[in-house]
Image (cartoon, rainbow over all chains, first blue to last red; front, side, top):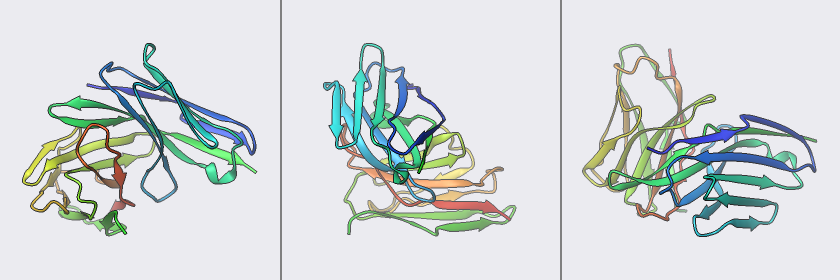
Length: 114
Length: 113
């Protein structure tokens, strides 16, 4: 099955700095890679996603890059703000026994200091 | 508003007791999922259902049971066989096809008394 590794587990930055979170996956058949943001006591919410036919996608201060050859993808947040503080999860979606099941990374706790 | 509703927000279980967590969605999604979240462990899949009256075990199904009698509802029962049930439980749904986004509920925090 799919295995997703996410690093770092904790990331502390100053407001205005950039933050980068990296994930690797094992199943070359995975073709959809979403990123979720989870605030304390809430469920994860999708913030950006990328499909395997695209190398980069940007949405305002957030961007995601995908390297299919190396099987890794990254989340980039520029000009970080205190409200960006949360846990971020990457995921890779692959076909498992007749269903598309996402496999999640273990999460990165991002702390943005004012 | 369309979305996923989990209840209760907090739940306490006594030893030997079964408890049921509710998950309802009005997104008309075929697929529903239950995840368990522990600190530093990410999201681990307990059960999933692609269609009414059908469900499959995920990675950590032991000690849990589910039913899918209606498209909108996917309740999770934490049985007394689950010896370490304290965790944050998340329900999710999507339309069941390859490129559909997974939506999550707000979660239920289960603790043992």
